[in-house]
Length: 117
Length: 250
Length: 130
Ligand code: SF4
Ligand code: FES
Image (cartoon, rainbow over all chains, first blue to last red; front, side):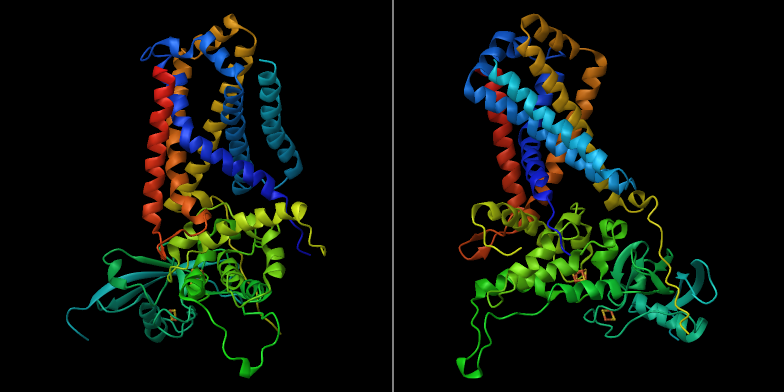
């Protein structure tokens, strides 16, 4: 009768992602998307050697994985729920596979890349 | 009638099941004084302008929870809202959103009553307790954990505020979950495991997307949104704990 | 015979019918910008892993006016996300007690703003000066 939902899995990832976005994403967007491209700060802060060196250490790997993957989970979960809000009630399995699949891909791919760096 | 009397326009969304296929607005001019509630305005309409207008009320003092309606699109207790707040503008009244309209401002609340029953809104003791064993003791701190969630008057304003309930009528909804939480958190109760099954379901806490409007409109500061979302955490712990410490059963 | 015929009102366009709902939809929409930015970062990581030339190409792409415009909007979205996130967090956390008193919601929200401010400054400091 009352079937247990598997929502806790995606909700936990959504929650963790929401925290990461709230506490860090504005800074990253400001640096990579505005300050460096507009020349407000020197492009040296995003120099290849510096970033590659950061990604070589285990802390850097973990950090990059967290700031890429968790916001994706946060994003796809909200988008999935919004579909229903806008009256799109069909194709639930399809949208689950596409959206959560994208977030899973956005977790495994960086994991793979980072291990090799 | 007093000289300082003013007149306000009240539009009522009428629906008469025997005659109408769908609701329509009917406008009334209502003389009022500053101390008159919206409920008294509707009572004036029924007594002097159109006796067929239907609505629910009882206590006139924000405690029975039966006079809720949409007042200019916002769910409110009509006995706790005053006509003067809207004057010189007009007031539009509509039955509580997201519920089927039975007639005019009267909704069909059987769905909510069913949900209320399903959560076992009463203390289920561990074992029957003899009178000579005395009362159940509760510390002020234990009371504080549930006090706020026990002030619900079942007015259903929170359901009228919740788009998720409107979109998915199977969703257990704010007040039922707030009351469920109130009993689950009670130190004298022992039916938590049973109630958790309701929360863990898709129709339980997971129907909520934290719009948060339920808590804003609640006339008793119950904060159902907090009850629901704290139970997302509880449900997640419950979900994971199965793997760590299986307790058998379902 | 019952003459009951309950009327169920449609939900069409509900999200525009109340300012609270509009703000809710706005909050949920931030997810689109968050998602796109995460993908941009992911592309950056792919480029970083393929060497210096590829990485510099990514940096160049970020200089296009369209990219800068997107990031300005995305910054707004991320900040709006943060504000709304801090506002509802006290509804998700179990109540906090301090010396036997429940900590008021406003204090919990302020504490998050302070924490976020500190973390933003630390991140900026690490990125700009180390
Ligand atoms: S939680 Fe508040 S709004 Fe909802 S039924 Fe109870 S008193 Fe009314
Ligand atoms: S009449 Fe009882 S709550 Fe309004």
